[in-house]
Amino acid sequence: MKMDGKTVLVTGSTDGVGRYVAAKLAAAGARVLIHGRDRERAGTLADEIKRQGHSEPIFYQADLSSLAAARQLAETVLAEHKRLDVFISNAGIGSRTLGTERRTSADGHELRFAVNYLSGFLLAHLLLPLLKASAPSRIVNVASLGQHPLDFDDVMLTKGYTGTRAYAQSKLAQIMFTVDLARELEGSGVTVNALHPATYMNTTMVREGGITPISTVEQGGDAILHLATGDDVAGKSGLFFNGMQQSQANPQAYDEAARKRLRALSLELTGLSA
Ligand SMILES: NC(=O)c1ccc[n+]([C@@H]2O[C@H](COP(=O)([O-])OP(=O)(O)OC[C@H]3O[C@@H](n4cnc5c(N)ncnc54)[C@H](OP(=O)(O)O)[C@@H]3O)[C@@H](O)[C@H]2O)c1
Image 1 (cartoon, rainbow, N blue to C red):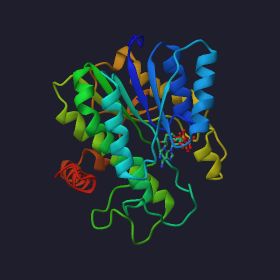
Image 2: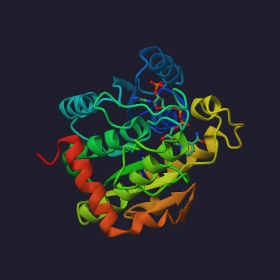
Image 3: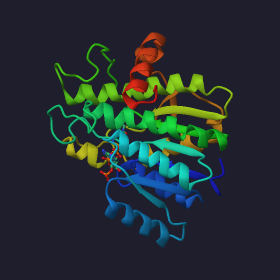
């Protein structure tokens, strides 16, 4: 896909793999909407992009542990842009971000489920009219190979919480949403795919988890860019990729009844069903 004149939103682009992806897209000529919580980190990235002679990215500050903030982010993007060609839902927290204890979001939901999945679900739905108007357009959900089936009797993990399980169920929820949304978007010109970018890239999330990185940000970032811009994936939708390769996700992603339950729960929690 030629990126000249295209508008791309990359959540979680003030750090890690999102930062790399945003810089590459700006270098390819896209108007890049960067996002994160930290204005200073965003400023450093914007300066770097400008110094290299590319258009200055536009920064949107929003804490995605609050659904109101996610909604506000979508509303601002809708108000300020006439098109959105690619939405990369990348912001996320790791299994040990902010410690090993169970935490909740501003809305009282389990924190990893809220930040990694629910906010992206809400953003994608609110941005859909603009994505449809800009078709052919793409949504890329940055998920993981770390996947754990959701227990619909305790999605908020009030019992037996571990950060690893919380992270992995949030990542599978993203993939289930991808499969589900692709069906809904058939014929609209908007595609949606999910991926595991790379294993243990050298990012803040991995380092703060006490894990020794084994992949580079470039490896994972190039896999994200492949789904966001690659000609070979144009028209492909509802798929899960492991890096550059199409792959299979946890069986729950292909369980229609489970996806239906997740969809109903997500619509209710985000207020979209109202
Ligand atoms: N690293 C890996 O090996 C790996 C493997 C598989 C999948 N992934 C996925 O790749 C994505 C990016 O991860 P990364 O490794 O690049 O992580 P990272 O370096 O820790 O960056 C995370 C990004 O998300 C943003 N973010 C975190 N919490 C947020 C919140 N509450 N509200 C808004 N923004 C928030 C951060 O913004 P601030 O600057 O405001 O903190 C930052 O820009 C994640 O979805 C992750 O699950 C990573």
